[in-house]
Length: 374
Image 1 (cartoon, rainbow, N blue to C red):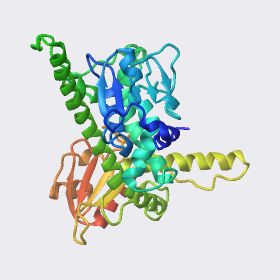
Image 2: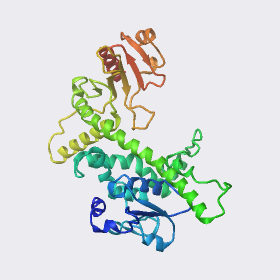
Image 3: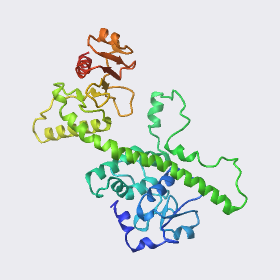
Image 4: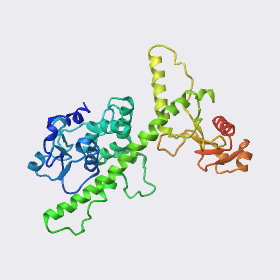
């Protein structure tokens, strides 16, 4: 089980490789990558590793003396605290995901739950811990696994088939680049003394580990403090959507705006699966609701706030909407919006049609209703 590695730290073997009182973590020296930098950072979030030392080497005898070894050694054995992924035949993945794990994914697989539980101050087997454990992997750690294992975000064959090309350069900047840019350049001067050179390299690694770790912790804090509390609010709004449109195409966040996209897609998937299950059992689906097209929410949590009407994207990160606001409205502001749409209180409609605004809830609702019928 994924939790067992963390639990084993509480047993007597936790004293091995302890040096002067803390556990010793081993990883390879030389050019460093995001996966082992994050793996080391994540381990040190846990109390058992809080005072751990770090050895960066490829010397088997030195690695043998370490309590935990990541990204080197050619061995994956959680019972022995060995987390490498380079050996022939390695094919471990996170539950339900296709991407082969790197050392970051291995450490998160075994220690992610206690890290999340520690942040939420909840038991490791709590539902919300499991939810955040999976969310944090899919939204952060998996990208590092893919990067280190040479997995493209898009199928290169399909891109070639349709002739897709980048419209601009992103300079190759991604989560992996956060770390790789901290490696020394080929012509950077290095100390002549081997020990001093290794110390300088280790210092760069620690900076890289802190850098990727800061992003990881920010993600964890966001999902724990903002994303997770929003889940119940979006669930309530989704349950009430038929009150605003008989086909369920309009969802209203009544109190204030919250992060809704992830939760909406999940709720729709769950509803679709439930309908299919009912049909499979020979019953009636019972719901004629369609997917949500527009989400309404106040700009601020105050009674006099203006309201936004936002088109739901095709996917969470897409700039394409399921159904954008009507083309004739796009780019208009204030009186022009009112004149073109025929709805009082218009404030604006974005040029791409993904979002618009109105002075009142009634006006925003009328915009969404008219857009649904357009």
